[in-house]
Image 1: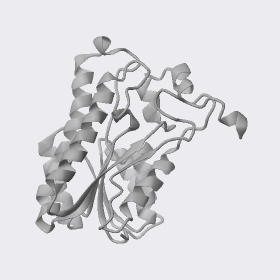
Image 2 (image 1 turned 180 degrees about the horizontal axis):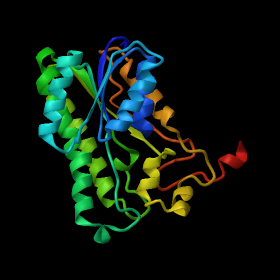
Image 3 (image 1 turned 135 degrees about the horizontal axis):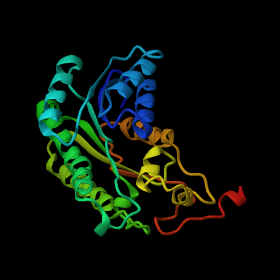
Length: 264
């Protein structure tokens, strides 16, 4: 499926993987609706993307954990850009690591649950009801994580792991419930990616952060963006239902080939 002229709503768009996805979608000719919490970063990103493209781009500072804000922003974006062809749920956060679960602050637990679970559901609910279900077509791509399938071997991941497992379950159930439509529901699971997000997950503990990547090269955000475009460009009768993108040295969450770089 060509992305030329398609309207794509992307959450968590202002930095890291989201910014890389936005850049790749622009290269593929898509029109973009960009949501994140930072209006300044979104403004700068729109200016950067518009400099090299004639695609239509709009943006909004949206708290995905607030359904009323999500619904209003989606409705407004549709009025400006037209019907939404693709939703990419990418917004997410991890707080409190590497502290174990009993030491986490309750507000941090609530914030993670609201963003990582409610945010995905609220966005899908609004986009389906305001756009996709009227035409019974579209694509929802949820950026989940390999941590949704395997328990991380390091502390501070209980809530994040549970959030990602919930995203996987939601993706699978929603795909079933939309049987009878041409709406595809997909999941992309990144492995270890060198972004500020991973730094936040370990509480800016530099030693622990570097330990993630000892002995091999991690992914970078454009690797994930390339996978997103690949999944979306498949013909509508073909679904890459789920795809893991990990460094080859990341054999699982518990097994890393720390000698990978030595052999290169």
